[in-house]
Amino acid sequence: MKAKRYSAEFKSSIVDLYNEGCSANSLANEYHLAVQTVTGCVKNLKSILTALILKIVHFLV
Image 1 (cartoon, rainbow, N blue to C red):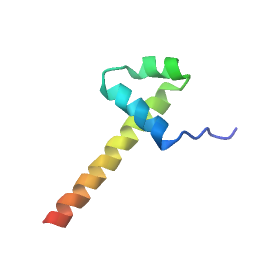
Image 2 (tube, helix red, strand yellow):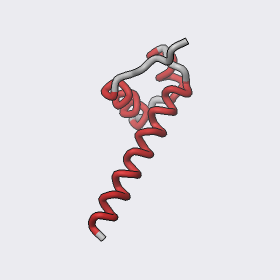
Image 3 (cartoon, rainbow, N blue to C red):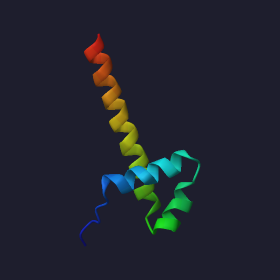
Image 4 (cartoon, rainbow, N blue to C red):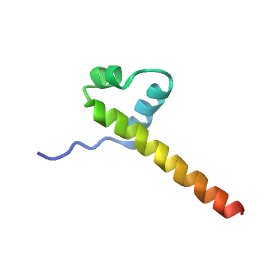
């Protein structure tokens, strides 16, 4: 079975809702996603932001 792909905009909106206080379970139920999909979006965005911050700090030093 081929994995379903979601747009960056959709993932970003899911992460925004999560950061506003919605639980991963409620978002998964509302948008018909697996809980792992929601938590994966959040985790991936955090790692991207961390990498970006590290690059900026490295550039400034």
